[in-house]
Structure formats: C-alpha cells, structure tokens
Length: 468
Image (cartoon, rainbow, N blue to C red):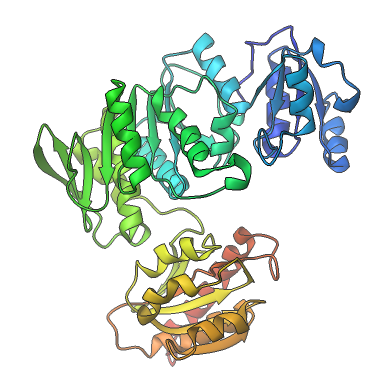
C-alpha cells in the first residue's frame, strides 16, 4: 500500500466503496488522514465498517470541514449530471479528486524519482500496460502495475526511487487527476466512447489529452485524426512527442511504426528496423502492432536496449481474456477473447486470423454484429450461444456456416471437432462473443475461464489416440 501523507491531519470525504474506494480509504487512514466514507450501496458501507473505516452518510455532512472529496472513478463528475456529493463539494468550495491524483501528489512530495508511466486510449490500453510492465520486468526493473488494470494504484508497493509504476488510466480517472504529470504518458487512440459520462467527443478527447500534455515524453498514436491532431498540438506546445503508428511510416516527427508485423524506429528522418512480432500468437493483428509500438517507445525511453526489448516482447504471454491462447492440439489453437464484449472489440480478433471457428453470442449490444460483415469470409463456421443466438444467425445467414449451440460447452465441443478435420495449416477456435456475458455468466472473466477449461479438455481429446 502507498500511504497518503500529503493530507495528514486533514479531514476528507470519500464516496464510492468498491475495490479502489476501499483501498483509497485505507491508504488515507494509513497516512494519518481522517476519512468519512459513504456509498449508496448499503452492503458496501457495512463491509467498510467491518474493515474499520469510519462511515458517515455524506448527505448529513458539513462539507466545509473537508479538505477534499475523494470520488471513486465510476461516480459521475460532470455528465449526465454531477453526483450529489460533487454538488455538495462544489457548493462548499471543496476540490473533487480521485486516487490517481492522490498518488501523483504523494509521489511529488515523497519520491519524485520514482518513474511513472501512465497509459490511456479508447482501445488497447490494458494490453499495452501489461506488455509494457512485462518488458520492463524482463529487463530487470522493479515494476509495479495497476490503476485501471489489476490492483488499484494505491494498493501498489510503497514509492521508492528505483521502482517504476506502470499505470493504466481511464478517462474517469484522468478527469479526477488535475495534476497528472507522468514521466512517460501514452495516448494510443481515440474513438467515441463513454460519451454519456463526458458529454461530447471533444470533451472526451480533451480529458485524454491531459495525460500526455504534462508528460516529459508523450507517446501518441497517430492512426486516427483526433489523436494525430493532438500530437501536432503537443509538439507546437513544445512537449517532446513520439508518434506511433500501425499503418506504415510516420509522415512527420520521430517515433515507432509498424509495417505489418515488422516494427521500425524513425529518428531524424532515418528508419531503423527494430523487431518483428510475426508469429506471436498474443500480439496478432494491427491493433497489437500499435500496442507493441507504444510499449517499445516506453521501454526504450526508460533505458532498455533494443535486444532487451525484443526479448521481453518475445516472452509476453498475453493478457487474460484478450486474444489469449489457452490450448493447442496439432494445427488447432484455442483462443480466449472473452473481453470481446462488443462488435468493435471482436473485429480486432476476427482480423487476426484467417480460418476461424467462431464462438459468439451472449447478451447483445446495440447494433449486434452487422458491422463485422467484412470479416465473415474468414469464418469457417460460427457456433452461437446465449440470448443473441437467433439474431446473430440471421445476420450470418448466407454469409457463413452457422450452428446454434445454446451454451458454451456445446459450442466448444462442436467447434473443436470441426476444426480438427480442417486441412488448413492453422485454424483457430475463437471465443470472441461480441456480447456481454450476463445472460449465462456473471462476468466476461468467468466466461473466459470456463472457455479455457473446456478448451483444455477438447485439446486433450483431440490429441488422444483415436481422437480427431
């Protein structure tokens, strides 16, 4: 844990007692801060009381006594309207901040030498964060990874000058961190997302830009127009910028770009071959080339050699539930992409393989899978499960072979059997549902874990004598 001492002896309000909220309350208390915590969920309040956290219904609180309102990132700050605690804080002239801001202030006060990498973007930030942390660890660094992935930021080990903190930041967290200023800030890409929370794409983009605007080095993807314009603005403001691209050579400035699976470094107009991710199962697809380019830029900036970088990338096992190979039987590879909970996420998975035995379905999102039609020729057969099964079957009708399986167990068994008979050099049994899990599973993680279990059994059956 990172105790928050910058508010020692002060009194703060805290709203939101989920995982990060509980951790934040304990970190504040460990630093000598008096905390009044609350949540609209009664069971969370009871759990906090059992953990020794002082709780007070903040509707009855005098906000004039608080030095800050510490807000959980999932609680609305501005849109669709400010949460009632935010309104009370603003009326009393009390600042509203989050756990990333507390980390930022503590680092500045206690150990500014601790290296801090912050990563954001609409897509790919979790993979990039995990890949960056893995590369740095393999290179011998003491790495702490967390934030919007894995452990809450204040649950990480205490600040020391030889530690590197690699933090995934959502737009919600950035919005609550006004002094965010990482050593290396990464902004991967931008597309419309969370607009119910930010009001407009322009506001959403401006929040993302905050992360890189105050960075010593800004690593910015330039494959969408909004991000490319952001890189230009930062450079005009004399921020050091490295551009990254998965669409070939960078047209201006320095950075790292991918031409297919091959990565190149561009510096002073000269291009140097850096490494290849050809054949890396966990880093397939153009989106992962962009993620790898970003992680490479961070690793090189922090002092790793190109050889150390290549070794770290080669040993990256992938992120759970994101294009994660979980079993192999001969030419059949079972890939868990349970995090593909909408069509946009699943598009990355379908673009990554050529012959796919696709398991899809669950609780559908708006638009279904109609946007994926250009990828249907890659699908050898689709195995549909859950509530979306009939709708998906209609969309696929006449464009791909379909079997309505109902549940995941039936789908994995059928897909494995069919894939085993394929004469392709490689074929993939892919779980990338393009749906939420909640019709049959409590979370995408549980769905992915179940797929991995079923895939292991199916792969074992295929490799047994007499198996397919």
